[in-house]
Amino acid sequence: MSSCCLTELPREVLVFILRWCKARDLAALASTCSLFHQLTSDEHLWKYLCWRDFSIDQPELGPIDKYRKLYTNLLHRYGYMLGVYQSQVAPCCGLVEIRYKAGSLEGVHWEPSLEQNILAPLNESIVFTIDGNEEPPKCLCIPHIYPHTCTLEIDKRKGVVTQYCSNSGMHVQKIGDHFGFNTLDLRVEPRKIYLTFLNEVIGGLSHMPLILPTPSDVPDALKAKDGSIPEHIMTPGLFQGTYGSHGLELILFRYKDENEIHGHKVTGDTNVYAGKISVKILLKYPMKLSVEIQGSISALKDVQPKISHTSSELCEQVFILPADCHKASNTPLPERCKARFHGFGQVAFLWFQNPHFVPVQVIVFNNDLLGVLWLELEKFSLYSRIKKEFTSNILQVDQSVV
Image (cartoon, rainbow, N blue to C red; front, side, top):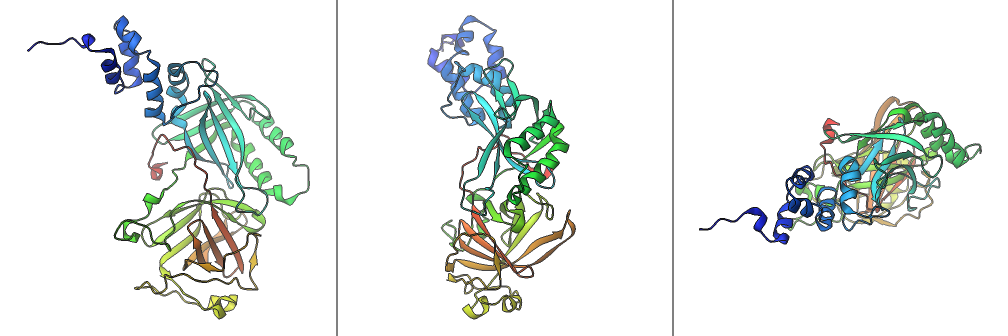
């Protein structure tokens, strides 16, 4: 049986083999001989590695003329930052997506509209860019408002990105000037609070990884025998909801287990901070209410939770908002809902003093729209699913250790 030297294999076979190598191994191979130097420079190979390692499919190179340069100069150092994060600007925090665009990475701050329209798309603003055409890549804060240098680092074990700004004072001032905070418009108050606390942390701002759940995260115990998800069971995800004078806030609904769904605040306010639980939905305590009971807050307060052992309460039913209940959103409400559950909502005094949970009723209108009736507050919050597709986190870290 004759032996074959590796270098005698067809070129396309060798390139295929190289697809299984790590980038640092390719760099080592390139220095062994002229053949491997040529093979490890193959653009199709580096284009594949951009997809394999960083999920960048058919990347637009922008000013960068080579996929190899894109990988070795930009992605090798910064590509692991791609994904969704919660910026630690207490108590408000913020939603930041680090995404790829035309040869660069950019950090995008997503925030709800200043109007009470839960169906409106999120507003975006660029908080930093990493220009892969520069060698080494150049990092800039707020490039479209007041470009100045910054440094970005990532802890690969925890997935935490830290942003160090070179001019934090002017950074915050220029944002305030850009959005015109000299006005007396109360709708900008949440952003003012955000900037106030941003001023304290922008010199070393931490972006914590936020792994967004998918329909596959619905517990198997709640699925039908064929694996489908019943209509009354909502899939987890990111929503925006109304919080009175605080405006719209972002809430991430996740399954705690097959018995409860918890809504965690991605963005918070001066009463209940970001990262805290806002709403608990008790799936074992559904209810079916008559029109007469639904018409009065006092009657709703008298409805006692009862655990359900059957599906009789888990059915589509009429929905009526009590006349003596305040609704912040102008979004029209459906006349019927898929299900209604008992639950708890967290309230607190200013600066998260005396936090406690109060009874609420959660109305699932459909998979993308739900309401929360705060019985003691006599207020109604409406939540709409954010349907935008965000960049997936490259580092799938265990958030319990972050």
